[in-house]
Image (cartoon, rainbow, N blue to C red; front, side, top):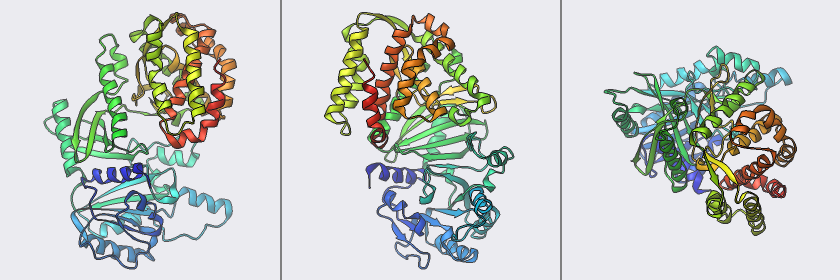
Length: 517
């Protein structure tokens, strides 16, 4: 059990304006993973007996496929309803009889493995309606590990934030285009409540601060999607139905995640306040709107950029447009914020201070790795000290996971998640990071082999695609190789903040550092 997992559970409670002492009931063998998020919850592996104590539950998590029949499920829902508090919430999970994955197995293998009770979409909705909960909300759960019945994302079936990547099966993409994807999804999550979700104290506070910030008299909010991120942040995708404007709210309940989101919020403020930054660029950067405390959380709200993450539509038809628009954005940002600087020792120390602090303070990095990392930074410093080079504002993690595009044509709509942003960075590092991700997304290569290949050929690739960029900032092949070394240092220090990811690639990082000479 980790503190981060407990934080994820606490954030889910915050969504419903519940506190960490709320009585919780978990029902069904498939939901045993939820015990990690809620260690104090009562857990029933079967549906044979519903605990009578405490008298009222604030949160009930239930696997609807663990019962013997639809009629039995309806009976249990009635019992649960009687034992929920006035502010109580039931999240009912149910597996889809007509799941595309399940039907595909049928056609491929001629048989389907025996499973517990399955439902069609209409059937599970009818059962919930018959239970007569005053309010219910339907979501499609998505998870990196579907077997745990957990979720990372919950999306309304007709939401614009239901994003199907281009590499999914054509039938799934067609169903999505027709607005019928929910009929093929693996499972459903129905949130049943005695009181309206968006009338709880969290959303009342969100509504109040947004109305004050944008000058609206009245706002009618809709929660189209919410994510529980593994960093420990609860992310809400909110629509104001009256104006059709979209906002994103992030709830943090631990120091680490608050620090990350706060840094993003502050950097967005700084960018939006730069006088020389063109309005066309500012329109592609989220606008920070408000922050406030709620229960034991801190909440940050900003405008939401419309579109879809670039990696989800990075197919042949849109690939060139995505890359061209992405490099143009950084080119314009560099021109607007860039300054030619003579690199003295003090400036270089400042440019690499954060990387050294992260690695040297890491409990994951070995002494040998720290020594190697620091030696390579010293090597880079010696190579550039005394030179005149361009420094500008940078994103810091510029790639296909932070670029929002128009799903129809790949046009860049905006750039998000600036928590790794720097006010002064070597011009070109963001572009090189984009190239690293471009090749990794397309080829799925081992990180070491990818960097080794880029070290030999990326200068020619950059020269053919971005001659104007290189001329503007006086970049030749020698300097581009130096910038590749800087990009490697930045990449490694970023990943060191995420222990599991770093552990999976630390051997490759050691070999990559040896390339810096």
